[in-house]
Image 1 (spheres, rainbow, N blue to C red):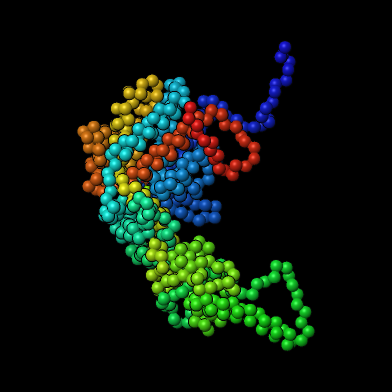
Image 2: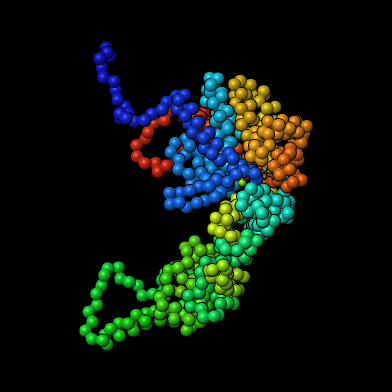
Length: 541
Ligand code: ADP
Ligand code: MG
């Protein structure tokens, strides 16, 4: 009966579509390609990448998140891997390369199972079991961190920095990082835990100079100079007004024209303008402020009046800096100058304008809220300072996590190898085909010591044999010492990481790998997803 009937067309003609095994292997291929792109940067001996954009701007970096953020990626599955890096960066600030490499390796191992006709659902289930077991293992082998153990926190900062441009000055930098974190730590009232808001740590970059001149400032540093200071650059016991409006006569929204018949009218008009500005400055003066930080511009006449009244002022301050100033000095952001009162003012003990390199900066210290600090990064060139910034970002994030959770693990592939060993022991207890996925997971996680070895110029096979046998003999902190080029206990070498870092790496990688595995149909969709990967909740089955 159906013969001769036209086929029903559901997708419009020309829609690109990839189905079944072909869709799967292409997705896996794309994901693995991305992971291969960052593999060589893993670890202290990892190489750097030079990224050149269409304007010829150059970034030299070893940071996985930055590399993936900057490269132009087309394939949808590859974009999902970039999301892995982003998600890892957002939650931990470090471990992005590891998470991406692990995702790639999980998919590679999964493909071997797919070729043996094991269903993706079975593989996914096995991966989930393995991931949960890995989490438990990590928790078991983690080492408690004492609250006042700032020395160990420094080692954690150094481990995160290893291999980045900053590692030459890691002693100084890690000291600054740990100090910044301990200064901003806040005890939660109920359970004596501490939380750290990284927003309280302002990073300022200035090239020209040496990394060694990097310093921690107990307060806020603004990339600004006084608009009206003559010689006198220091203000003590400053009462501060924060304005997010301009100190000038507002222009009318629509063009207005004033007809002036004789010169006296022009003078009257100008006088009126001047008086309006005078009234604004009076209002500031009446509030009792010595210093004004203005998010918008300050008119020349206003600058003059402010100087006459000995009120220091800085203009065109970024909104984010205004917020930090508000937090640090306890001043309120005011948008109507007429409404400014004493209660809106904040306080800082010392505000000083200093010249650093070729630029002037304002140092606002001894603030009302001592939990606001700044790190002033220095380095020879802009590229150096930028890479330093990325290293400090990673270190601050891991030290924060370690400080909050107080549990650490040993890096350099030590924790990964222990997980692999225990997963292999655990697999037979699961039975069925899932156990093959658990073993595949164990193989995948060994990519960490393997890549660390390879990037350090060691033979990965020899290293894997050595590190596995060390763990079999109960040396659960044995890893790849990339500096000494051998396998040994890394605890004495202080290769330490917060527990949450590895937990997160494994979780993100497992989720992403499962998500990609479960796709068996890639259809070009309508509209614009803006390159974002929409995630439906990965449901349990
Ligand atoms: P990620 O983006 O994943 O943080 P990194 O390039 O920062 O990548 O490398 C992190 C890896 O390097 C971790 O596995 C960490 O344990 C390891 N590592 C850091 N310092 C050392 C060291 N001194 N010896 C061996 N491994 C190290
Ligand atoms: Mg790192």
